[in-house]
Every structure is written in structure tokens, then in C-alpha cells.
Length: 314
Ligand code: TUI
Image 1 (cartoon, rainbow, N blue to C red):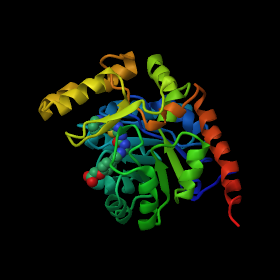
Image 2 (cartoon, helix red, strand yellow; image 1 turned 180 degrees about the vertical axis):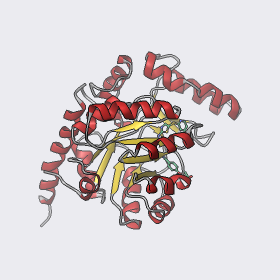
Image 3 (cartoon, rainbow, N blue to C red; image 1 turned 30 degrees about the vertical axis):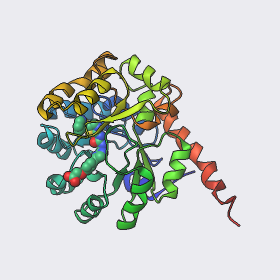
């Protein structure tokens, strides 16, 4: 059995988070992961507060276990979603794609545990000082908005500057990844791409298909020029976008080009115009299965590796 301080902090059975994937991670998926003993997380993405409140109600109707909400800090609705999180007193809020400092006091007052994604050592230090409950150290192997450092390099450096529990994210999809994360000093993991294949994940079947068919070099990063690099499957749209980016198209036009592309992937499975966000681990996702089974699978996969870790030590 794997039990870490993160399990005690949050009252969860397994130290496994499901990443807050915009347009994808709804109340139904989050509840399924939490029911399975992990921590399910509802993604606010660019949605308004009302949508988030509705998804929180759905999750509450499906599970008594704790779950979280992810606030995407670049959202135009960030302020109102932050308010909803405090009002609904969700167990955990995670943040992504920016600096959540201005909301920390409000959430802590409401008794919400704040677990920011940090992509650098400086951010890890700042969030520790401001009273975060734990930190998610997410490397650039992940899907969606990516930082500069890899998980292998970021996690130990974050562990060195904080005494908070560290959750490793980016590049983890099975028991080997979980075991490796623990070796780097993490006491929990967050996975996004692996949960795209969950039965309870409501994305278009073509999206799941593409993940299941992916091979090692199937993802690419676009948007470095605008300062918001994003990893997705190498389909038609990101290829076209990359051409525009390197062809000197101005930033406003690039932003306009990108608008609405994730929705086209998630809801319509549009292979021409959609942007299918995915981490580098897509090729390691092999089958569609219940979320609960995914949580158990990665934990049970990690156990023998961790127990056997001494075999080469004399
Ligand atoms: O946020 C994510 N993944 C996302 S957000 C998203 S929506 C989006 N689309 C286009 C452009 C930008 C966003 C799609 N996928 N993951 C968590 C994450 N956070 N990864 C990296 C970071 C991060 C980066 C910089 C966190 C903090 C940070 O600090 C910035 C600062 O202010 O110092």
C-alpha cells in the first residue's frame, strides 16, 4: 500500500491527482477520480463562474469524497471563479498558467487548500511563503500550457526549497512514472493525458482515438513566440499555426487563429481545425478504462518498483 503525507493532508486514499484540463475535466470526471480514491479536479478553463458552480454541484451529487477546482489564471473570468471556489468551499483549488498571489488570502480564509502549479524554483519559494498547502511541480512534458523545465529537473529543485508536499506532474502515465516521481522527492503525482482515456471522460471519441493511436513523437509545442507555449498532438492545426508563427505573422493574428481550437477538438473531434492538447505520454496510454481503475493501476504498478528499488544497492 502506498500512503504519503498528501493522503493525510487531503483525506484521500491514493496520492493521485487528475489534472484540471480545460473543456475536459468536468464534474463527472472529477467525481469518478475522487470516488476511485484519488483527487478529481474540475477545470474552470475560460468558463464563467456559473459553469464552475454547476460542475461543483454535479461532483457533489456524485461523490462525498474531496475534489478540487483548477483556476486557469489567464481566464477573463478568473476573479469570479475565485469567488465561487471560496463560496462553495471546495476542498482544494489548484492554479495554472500564472501567479495566484492575489487570491490566496480569500481562499485561505474560506478554508480552501491552495495547491498552485509552479514551473520554477522562484515561484515555489513565493507560494511556500504565501501559505500554499502543497505544490504541483509540472514539467514541460505535460500537455497544454508548458513551462521551460522538465519534470526530472524541476521536481528535485522544488523539493529542495520547500517543506510542503510536492506533487510531480508532466510525463507521468503509469506506475513507473509514479515510482520515479517519488524517487525525485515528490509524495504525489498529477496526471492529465492518462485520464483522457477514462470512460467517464466526455471528450469526442476521435480525441480518445488519437491519444490511443499516438506514438512517441506525436506531440509538438507551439506559441513560444507569444510567450504562451502549448503542447498538443501534431495534427493539421498546430502545424499550420507553427508555419504562421515562424512565417512572421503578428501576435494579434496568431491569438485570433488559436481562439476556439480546443473546443473544436473536445466537442467535435475536428482533425483539421481542432487543437488536441496532450502530454508527451500519449503513446503510453493504451486503453479506455474506468477512472477508478486508472488510479489503482498506477499505484499498483509503482508498488513493486519501489519495493525492488534496493536490488542494485550493495
Ligand atoms: O495551466 C496549465 N495548462 C494549461 S492552461 C491552458 S489554457 C491556455 N491556453 C493558451 C495559452 C495559455 C493557457 C492549457 N493548458 N498547466 C499548469 C501550468 N502552469 N503549467 C505551467 C504553469 C505555469 C507557468 C508559469 C505556472 C506559473 C507560471 O508562472 C508565471 C509567473 O507569473 O511567474
